[in-house]
Length: 196
Image (cartoon, rainbow, N blue to C red; front, side, top):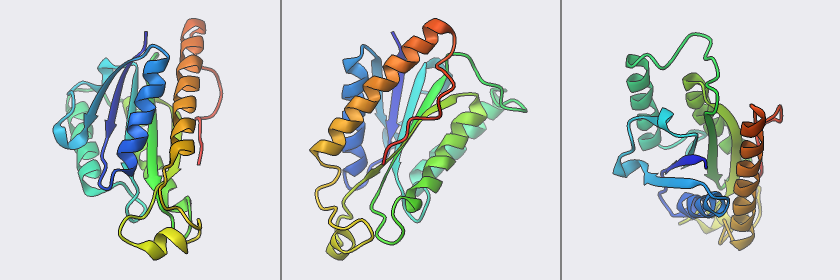
């Protein structure tokens, strides 16, 4: 059974909806899942989990300040402990997934990919293999024009039921792929699972 840690930061509720669906998908495949909001504090040892999922909204192309502060603090902790090694060798059986919600009124998903790549680099420095990089449209709360006339069209109510069903399905597929890869010694040479 995979032991997973699901960490997230949510301001308007978009990222929290995705985190709930992700948890359901992971647990539906038999994962033991610990869920924490970054603001509530997180376990010290990220390396104590087989899979760590980290989610945040994209604000001005990056995660918001509480997530940036969390990453910086975790980097210091793991660096001082000697967990970050030159060349960032992969740690067998350690996987990570990042998920980013975005509204993209100006340039679409490009407004979120930099946030996802930033979070992925955090895990790669720790030796985790990033096996999921997910970008999900979320309503731009408090700005009707950005939610109806931006590049993505009418995104009110997103992530919606269909988006969240896809998250559950992708989470289940990820667990199945990791379980199959673990049995064979590797999750496979596939690129990270991505959906938008």
